[in-house]
Length: 426
Picture 1 (cartoon, rainbow, N blue to C red):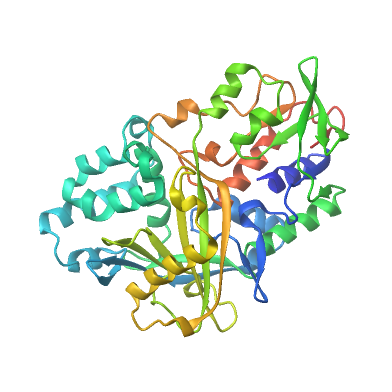
Picture 2 (picture 1 turned 90 degrees about the vertical axis):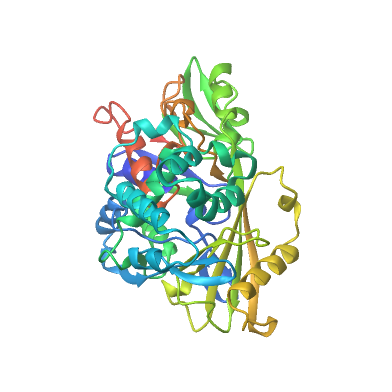
């Protein structure tokens, strides 16, 4: 989001400095070196509705690097892996009543077709799914996913947030029976590198390992930022850091605004990433609803984008910082995650593991509970020249590159008086 905002501001003729706390740019879309392979810290894919991504790729001259793949979903349930994600797989799923299957199929179809969401804002996903599909469908398909992602928050997650997730994936299809997802050749790093090159070509400056310690304010207007005791002047500041950092970073915000940022809950995300000698399944993703497995699903990333000869599997964990697993070591997380893979594919052995690692992000997923839209402060703050947004501002959409690009560029476009003079933006 920060890079997209910088790119758009430069197009408008502003002078721009980008400050990134990490040693690499890109935020959650950044890559890392995994045994000689450059891959995403957190997996990404493209859906056919991601218009903001396509527009940016086209502007940067890399639209041709998007590739589409026929992908599939699996469902591990009652100790067996089932095909999932199309009407036929739903009809063939054993152990579920025909009436429940029909209700669930109509529910998903309605989500995909739906374009409006305000009435869902004041209902929990649990109540909405139970009302639409029945208690049995909720218990079989949705309860494990919500509880293993949100734990104590599971019963209060917004129906609007769940609806947009179903709709986005449901609309990325080649046909009724065939899902189709996209990837960028070389991964999200290709987009990040192209953005960096465009920013620097237009005169923007990128400062890595440069955490903003405080935003400087005088007489109710932003005047710059403080980076490790060094001050940078700015006429506008666009903040895209996670909202939990905002109250401390911007002490001049009014108390009621600080309270609004503090009220937004976040959970951590860890990804256990395996490089394996063999495939786990033919599916890109597998949802898990199985007693004894405390993982909501896995992503076999190389069933979307081939990376060398190995199989790459992401096993995502989501949890509040209060959860005891938050303090688990990488080795312990890897052991549990691999045991999950062996449940899905018993032929896997430890000898199939070429490499394993864990990527972690403390504030990885906002808790979008009932009525969440009213919790989100305006992007423009009471401090003149200061805008603040993070991934929770995408609501009801989920985190993703397309939403990051859309909102980051919108923030820069909202700056007033751009025709008067070139302004300096941080």
